[in-house]
Image (cartoon, rainbow, N blue to C red; front, side, top):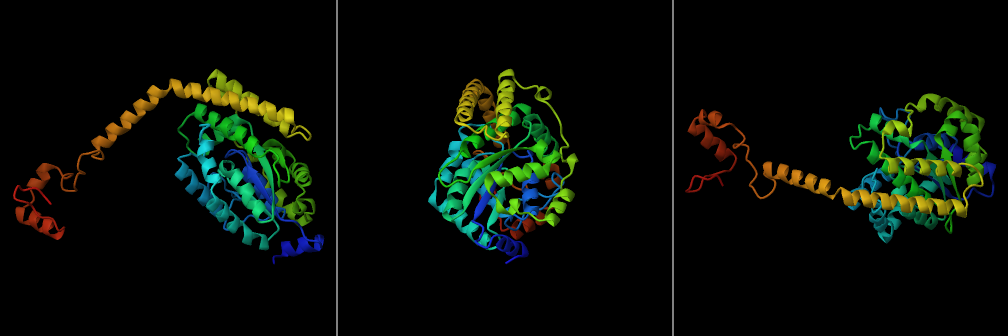
Length: 369
């Protein structure tokens, strides 16, 4: 048992109940910052963690196993991490309902509680599989709780374009943000066995992380956060950098189509309200249902009008494949790729020796076999 686990036991002789904090939200919205704070305050990120890189030099605070299994499932479902299709939720939902997948996640979670009773699981892909993780956590005897990070959509789009070299354009990234956040809101609504949810503004986290994280700990009854130590608080002060918000932008900077611009702005406005205590009401849920329906309608209209574009792209891809010999034509051999005048200059005896070494012969017609 680690020093932190012993400290938790001494702080609460009756034992701290198992909990899993799921940190959700779009990539580049501050999920790494929140996960990094709560882990430095004592909650446990299952190891090994994804290593830092240039896009996030302070680290991601996300388990490598979680990222790998999500990549596997997204590839199977043909879903992108930032997918703007409403139907993508049905594709990943089929995986969430699989019993072997639920067992797999439960069996991965279980041994990590020996390290600490309160875990934190974070990954930008997490929202696609929240239903599965909820069930898996409950099966281990843990209470699932949820924190969704909120950052202005224009900043999320700008950050992805800057650090991920995203070439799909602002409209696609804004649409994928709307799709992700509206369905994350729906997926984290209170359900049997849950321990609650919070919405955290990235700006609040950077400007006053103590107040914001303390409120989160009390709202979700996370004992590790409520009873944190002074040395851990000092460590978070060293971790937090106000300059973490390196990209600032507004929706007007994105030059979005008007209906998408308006829907993105309305979604952000309503999500912001959820960061205020007491605002997570049935009326708010009804508003989000309406926004989600409006997004589905907008996407279906755009999809219907862009069929010609999609067909043109398919035909272009097919033409390229045919040109490369991938559709029906036999693949070009290495010999065929050598210019004829170069081949002609090679003595016949050398060419025969090469073919023999490669196990190739010529039939009666002179064709290579």
